Length: 413
Length: 217
Image 1 (cartoon, rainbow over the protein chains, first blue to last red):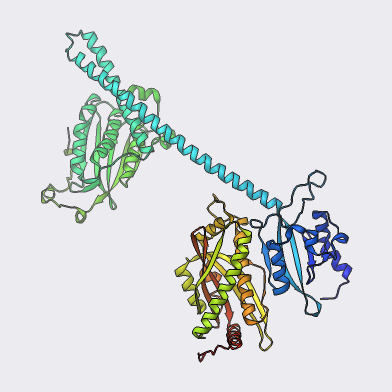
Image 2: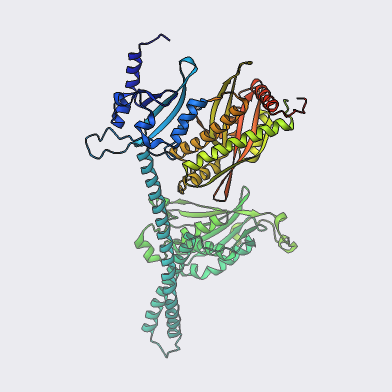
């Protein structure tokens, strides 16, 4: 490297975007660049040849002082962090030079030993302005804190909402139950004879209180699912028995629409691990939907078959199918393809949402195929409970007949 | 493997303890709380062993600071090395919180807190080096602190160099502040020459004290 004139070196030092102070072995200032002049208001002429602690008396006894000492005496380098050393020197931001008082400059200080002529050691102090970085970090921290606070608030609101729904629904259910009870007593003639016209009116009232009860029960289920309070009691279940039972329970409802439920079980020996009540609820939802949307004198087929490692249970109808535009939201809340149609057929629009949550809790998946004008098949897969995992493999269940070849023969009704 | 006599070992432990004493008083001036620093164990190991020890005692993810150091001995070549102060990654935030005395709500160190951690390491490493320099009667220069975050292997460059060609002085430092303790690790990475120079220096020191060095190493 060529030897430069002292004035050139000083010019280079003055161009720098940081403060530079050079101290001799007695801590006297040898060099003071123009950045330091701007930030401290002290010119090089005023600073040079004076001890640093005379220019900045506040440094005496502080970390910066011993770090300078370590550099001169021991050749140690130090970097003073802003967090532990605030306002090492009295420096001010130049941006606000016209305003009084000027804004304090947040700065960071690096101290390095410099080998000087004749074996002496000098000390180089480099000062950088980190005001902008400190402000940015403070802002980021505030943003993070605000985000945390609003996330907490949102969580609290959602909890409050669920609790509110749950409380209100319970409060609605209790009087409805007694309304319904009283109505059936009136219809049964307990309060005296009732005219044909009166009976028809009471029956309308009963149908609608039942519908309201179903809606409230569904809302309660959705609230439970959302708050994670839906309880499950898992046990080994014979799939065949479960399907038979669901067909029996929903037969009366299907009869209203003149619909027949038939079961085609290709896996009569299979067991699954599940909550009986909840799976019955799934079947009731799928069967009532299928019956409701079937043509008069139609058939709803329940089918069970193997699908890979799982068992697939499907419920098919010959209704007019699910329109394309409605398919994406079918498992959403209050999902109804055509509200006038549903009003006519009853239903809460919450059923499939609940069904999906229950199936997923059984480590299963739910889906559907639908052809407009031809019919719809809803299916869900449940993991099979392998015989080796059963607590008590019963010989009786194995003596059931083999797969039935002719499904249509196995009519439930 | 270069071995140290028990006496040499004790001298190193004591030197580190003196360094920690200085570092603690420097830290006490910076923070309002009383800081205690102690060096319970010192061992000289290979780079591979150091990686294992650090992984076992701290965690695989560590953070801290390193500084290069160098000294010019009259009789031998220049001596170079690297000094580290490392913490388990999860504890580094705790150290800064303890020293800054405020609870940082964020889960990771921000740039400013990283700088504070770096300064704590800077103070401890400089104090350690000046303590060694007093022992050896020889100046040891240190470079600027560099923040280190990563796995034990990557920080100690275990994959980059022939790990048998150098030595590591590994010591455990416990920080005590308001009855809470956090463990940190001071690791000095030296080549064979530096270790020999250190040993020669310790022997000179023992001779000056008129203590016969009973070992044969």
